[in-house]
Amino acid sequence: MPNLRYAIFGTGFWSQFQIAAWNQVGGVDAVACYNRTVSRAEKVAARFGIPKVYADPEELVLNEKIDFMDIITEIDAHSALVFMAARHKIPVICQKPMAPDLQTAEQMVAVCKEAGNPFFIHENWRWQTPIRGLKQLMLQGDIGRIFRGRIEMVSGFPVFKNQPLLLTLEHFIITDLGSHLLDTARFLFGEAESIYCLTRKVHPDIAGEDAATILLDMGGQTSVSIHMAYAENYLEREAFPQTFFFLEGEKGSLELGPDYWLHLTTQRGTFSQRIPPPRYGWADPAYDVVQSSIVPCNANLLKALQGEGEAETTGEDNLKTVRLVFAAYDSAQRKQAILF
Image (tube, rainbow, N blue to C red; front, top):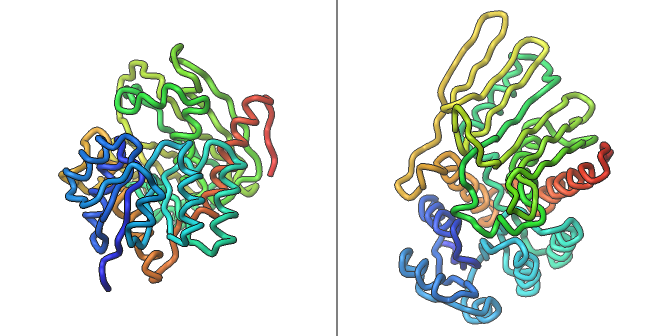
């Protein structure tokens, strides 16, 4: 099968890792890139040998023969580019969070569905090696019915240093990190029946919230608490960007702890195994477990683009995560649970 031709839309911080991951997967060729600040696009194009650079996205799709678009812009630019993809019948992958509000996300999904145009969300968190290992142990059933789970990603890492735009977001940690963690909760436990959320602003100079606590009732079977923070405070053990899990079942427990150690405990004792992420030379060591997960996520999306399989993170599926994100904000504002 010939390589699929694709174009990058947005050449900011994450684009370099997205392109590197595509190169790692193979089977694709980046033929053009767009950025409204052309000098940034030129730097990325030079680094990765991308032949064409554009300052106008419409001009790119009219002049280049591409098999799919990969959108890595800021969130406010996502919808216009997805609508453009639907008009031109070009399959499109979009970074999370899908949109700055629920209505726009619903429109994006509806427009692509009406056009019959494939629409995928690049939701890579669930593809982290240790999280896939946790899911595999869950499916073994050794701990029986899981009645409670805890998901935690609390960090003092200076996340605003690499991505200063995050300082200006009216909605910050739940859209940025919560999108990942809520999608992971769905991946592990299914769909939620209710959500309750509390938010906090620790940094005085940011527009949105930088800490949140969410409680989910997953299908009436499992209660899941999610704890997230980018307070940039001092922690005894900084493990950015690892996510920790503790799951309680009727016959035992499962824990994914620091340094990618998985612990399965039953009446027979505790079985432990370390499931680290693969190492890639292009990945930033500070983001290692996250950036390595881009590779299997891209591989899954490529199979779908080639017609050889189903994508896990379609626009339609991710809309369920987006609804949880904005229900969390609604809950925090009302100070009450939101039922689905």
